[in-house]
Length: 97
Image (cartoon, rainbow, N blue to C red; front, side):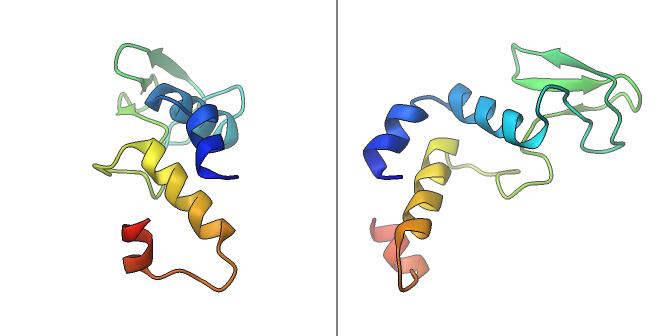
């Protein structure tokens, strides 16, 4: 997938979150802490509330995207660049991209 395609497919943070949710959970969100499917969405904060352990969590908890300060779109772009390179890519090369 090229850079233009990434920006067309995932133009906003919401689109990136929806993609991760579909890939990770399918139709039913599962608590990242207690693994309970008894959750309530909190759409305003783009999070979910677990009714079992009473915690709030997002789809990025427990992934490489957890506690990141970079936008998810940049992460998706970096992953696409890494996957497209044939001989490997150093962190410095990725930073220049």
